[in-house]
Amino acid sequence: MQAVASHVIADRISRISISSTMKVAADAERLRSEGVDVVDFSAGEPDFPTPENIKQAAIRALDQNFTKYTNTAGTAELKNAVCQYHARHFGTSYKPNECLITVGGKHIVFNTMQALINPGDEVVIPVPYWVTYKDVVNYAGGKCVFIQTHEERGFALTAPMVEAHLTPQTKIVLINSPSNPSGAVVDRTDFEQIFRLTSERGIYLMTDECYCQFLYDSEPFSIASLPGAKQTVLVAGSLSKTYSMTGWRIGFGLMPAEIISAMTKLQSHSTSNPTSFAQKAAVEALAGPQDSVRAMLAEYRRRRDFVINRLRAIPGVSCAEPRGAFYAYPNMGVVLGKNGIENTLHLAERLLSEAKVAVVPGEAFGTERHVRLSYATSMKELERGLDRIHEFIVRNS
Image (spheres, helix red, strand yellow):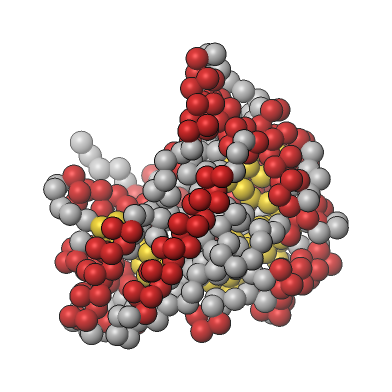
């Protein structure tokens, strides 16, 4: 069969690349299927099972044949549950017409960019950034404007740093706190100053709250709780990490009704509605007991401390302490330029092929000397993997 000519593929597809995290996970899975003993630190996926009460809610929905189409924007029950959850935890006051249910948190980010970004509009994004941000902005025809944060300051983001990158073309400032991949958290005072900057200029401030319940030294907070924030703050939320529901694919957005309406129009021609019985499970997750969230956070804190100590014990390796989420972002510059390791792409390939450890290269997140390790895995796997990384770094530095 004749190969498809490259010019047949739409130009917009050339603006994006395959998700680096998904590629590394697929490479690791391929090796495991061949019988290779791989320690996988690549996927940002909790190793905990979905809590039993959530699974039972889905089973009840199936038993009751709740398997048909729902409203494109999500069931009224789930939209109410999202609004009530956000009000209970953060003191906001969203209404169902300001809420959209999506097929995972990534979907709400994609929909938002498609609904708001015109060619040439600028989206300000701190570095390091989650891999998808750059690609969804590019796909929409927008321009990414990157803010370089600094490892020695814990990748902290401040209002002056944001202000220096605002222009008349700025449409959105996009903040993920806690951050994937660094675990950095924007301090509440800094976040409030950033909100004042953006709101005064009519710029949207998008807050990706995917990891908002996993904070190690501060209380969960949403910038959307500030007076007047609903006009320009765009909330992206997900149940994937908080409730270990990655495969259920339920996310949500809380935004002005006009934007929700525009995204609903888009969603009506893409996914139709989120999966019906997964929405029933999501209602239970948000409205039911929250003990599982606290238990996961306690375990992530224990793992965080272990991982950071082990990484810092490797000669030449440094690592800013994550203040949230479940990722470590160590600086592996000590081996770059040695033994054929030109960059972190090569480093990740060599770690996988030689040490049998899967990590994600920093190039995927906008930096050149780091790799991302997810510690959302067992202590046994963390010990085995870090032993292998330590040995590899010592051998090649």
